[in-house]
Length: 597
Image 1 (cartoon, rainbow, N blue to C red):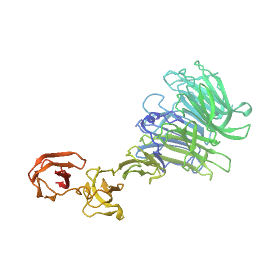
Image 2: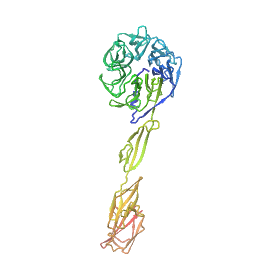
Image 3: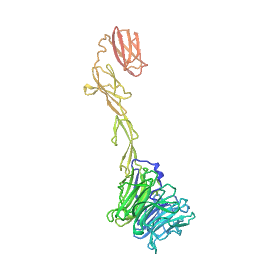
Image 4: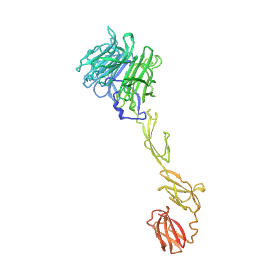
């Protein structure tokens, strides 16, 4: 693929959204040989749909070596022998299918054990490459080479910059136009300054349909560093329009880190005049560049690469390089928090210098993986591969509580809730955060009671009941386990109600009328059977009553008769519950409680 520091899978952004860390980087060891003073890139040289890797540099034996690794799938790579690609270091690789035959071809430049080499190598699809002898300048290293359609005609042109290692040495920047048939013509007098130790990045900054250039590096004249944006004039020439603090020995990238639709700029390197190592991130607003995120560490001999590695919808970056020679070689991921804020992740990496780095989804699982190489502080030429694994650590906390519940988020809930979430940092066994969703059911018991003289009725239905004597230390009243309770002794009474696993107790209610109901009655009466299901029979001397009524616990008269002379009453049509039989004769009344089953 055409080498970019921005992994081109931004379409995944809309598919994922996580509040917790949804990805975890795990170091793997596919058998790649370490490289220092090196370069790497991913591309599909065999057209089989997965990304292969090429690396170059000084190997673990400090020999200049280029290695091509074929991706076999499932994280397995095979070293391809006799590729036809020269052994290179101190250079650059870029893959793209310039001839549209279904496999990626290679732009390569670098130093060798002899003269430096730069050129176009056409993939034959079988792991071998043929030098195209395309007429691009040879013997260039310490720079960059890019596939770029700078004129917008649909075919890939070539840009190359760096140190020309020839009898007439110098620093060059050359642009080659592709005529569509694979013939390249050097565009002279482009207006682009020649630089070495360079980095070049292309983007359509002014939205005019052609690509503009950012270029940094060391200029030949006066050995001064440069950091320049060149606008594309559309006629094979370019004009410098913005100069930044100049650097060399660094890296650069165009990215839209703030998702506002225009290209922002990051670059790093060594500033000769101040002797400082710097890293700058510039926010682009209509070609006005404002520095943001000034907490980013300044490094040179740098590699930096961008991708949405945590799949949260914005771009993050990895950076590695030297902060102070012989003292510090940091390597960090900076996570994009939005609002121009970046924070270092808690991943620990081994730093290096004079290396390269790229995010790429080599395992085709939808998230970007990281590979970087270079010479480490110990002098070891190394490579590190981190596979990006999706964290499947999610769960639901199912809770049934009474009245209220205080969850791990510190919130006290008084109603049911199935939407609250909480992230437990590093809570999963694989190092990922655990995202927990609350599934809370709040049950409550209605402990209100309705009182009708000496009878107390719990409003809550279909529950368990236990009536209590408040004046006797809330002791249970034996046998009183119905929804209604009629006191036979004056006192204070409450009910303990249990429903859906919750138990609560009502307030105490005072009964002071027991005995009053029958205080004026000169009637001796008994009811049987009690409880009754079909009939109740009155055992009474008097045969005729002025009025007979059946009253429910809510005080409603549900049955009544005047001049009633029978001793048998049909109660089959009454609902189950507690009732009162009220008898009147000669101005006297008596009430008797009975239970309808």
